[in-house]
Image (cartoon, helix red, strand yellow):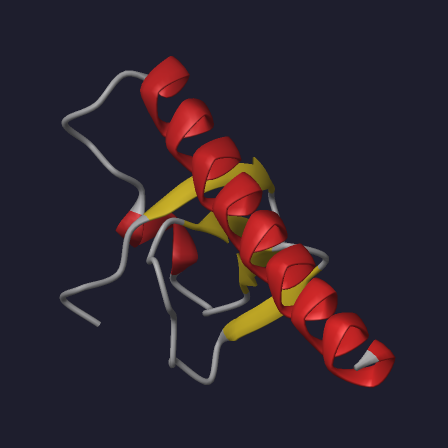
Length: 81
């Protein structure tokens, strides 16, 4: 769990700030991941202000969304050819 970083969201879970989480506690939620680890609050990024973790969370979500859309476009193009 040393690589875990989170952003607080609700008391029950935090937002995962890991690029490609493989942890069993990371739950896909749209284009984001939620951390449901019992100690998720222990992974909150302590060195960056809240605004930076929020921006990092948005950037990760947007990056995953763009990747997903690009993959869908490739599949559509393959079906049309």
